[in-house]
Image (cartoon, rainbow over all chains, first blue to last red; front, top):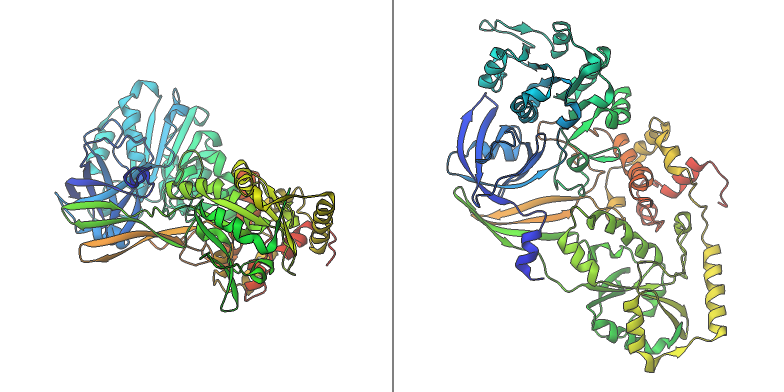
Length: 282
Length: 346
């Protein structure tokens, strides 16, 4: 095998992608539309992630926020919290980044076909759930009710306002938003995302749930999901860990028996129960 | 089984050098390390001593290696292959424990979905000449994992048993067989006497290792020990230096990092350690393994529970390096026997 053939097959070499559009979403988050220079489509499933590479700075794992049906490039929503994501903040239209992926498991929409679906997103957790919501809405007749709970810190941290407006006005979707801390402009619900469970009556036995948010949120949301009778194997969640290689080798994202970048990030609650339970008892 | 006069070992090394770059144990600054064979006569002292200070791991999975080079500005990212294309290694004189450890690396780097190309190339071409242990150390415990310290290993190509004036050579793979066939003029058939000597040496060495086999249910027992105070005890002593992970033949964690000068740079892959506090820390500051307790526990459980649940083999071969070099006397063999709760000769 020649050197260049090896190169083509290396797991760690990113591919150039151009930023074709960007929009500031909040103080901390920016939305990017990217397109591979080669013209290829990303070919991802909802819930997967990519490694975004800024040469000279490093790589960061970022959830893909566009649905697979979008074939003209793909979208990322990036919170600027570290070296790489702050370097990305400086980039705009026409700039180029490196992309590896897509990596990891996806959310198992097929498992909830025929069921009602509950989406629970906390903060940035809306980002990996967005492609799942879009995909479910594209095949709307495959599912029963679609219920969305979105909780975030404050009104200025609300992501995807246009999507949320659309979902709230869609009669086939039951979309509720809450903020932890309101300001004068806020007319919606105030409180934790778990409180939304009490606003909507649900048929737990016929519901599948997709949950994403900070680790601390899982514990309470999973308890609510159980309380309304959703079975553990119908609850799906996505974990955030430090992921470096993306292919289950480098060890950074290990969580008990799992390498989250490869065995996850999307898991069923069934799979993770022992692992999460252990964390919560500590 | 063939016999080669020990003073004719050069013929074997010369033949092996046709297969790739030969590395063998060499004494360097009071430390025995795998070093490139340069055609000189090998040091028998180095070959016969306990084991190399470092395993041969970095000959297949180098401590640092380039992944690619790039020239980048905001509008363009040009990537040039930086992957090394070194010839595969011939690892001469590797101990059975270290040779066995390569099976664990194979499980990580050669998995079907994401095989790593550079590792695969080196590994496919590599030749392992295993060397029967005769100088067993206090910290050795390979029989705990079913490894025969003086016996041949599945990953090897040729196994050598050192009978002082003569070396007993066994081909343990087809490639090993071909190499020995090519050396026919220098070899004689091993007679019953030599065979008997090998057998008794193997048994004597096996018996000289103080160790008990890992309990069949070790992984299961550990699965129920998540909250055991033993983790706190070990974490209290642990300095978090990571020496254990750098010396371990089976540890495979790494980092991907880079260096840049102007618009040009290189991304490299280098060993990393799960014992470091920032190993799991995310950009936002959250850390799933915030204290040494979680890190020590993860290291032990990864080797003795998770790896075995996933791959059917333990992620430890009992080489004892982490025991020898731990500044806080954390002892994985001791830990295994404690968990086992069974009598050990110690």
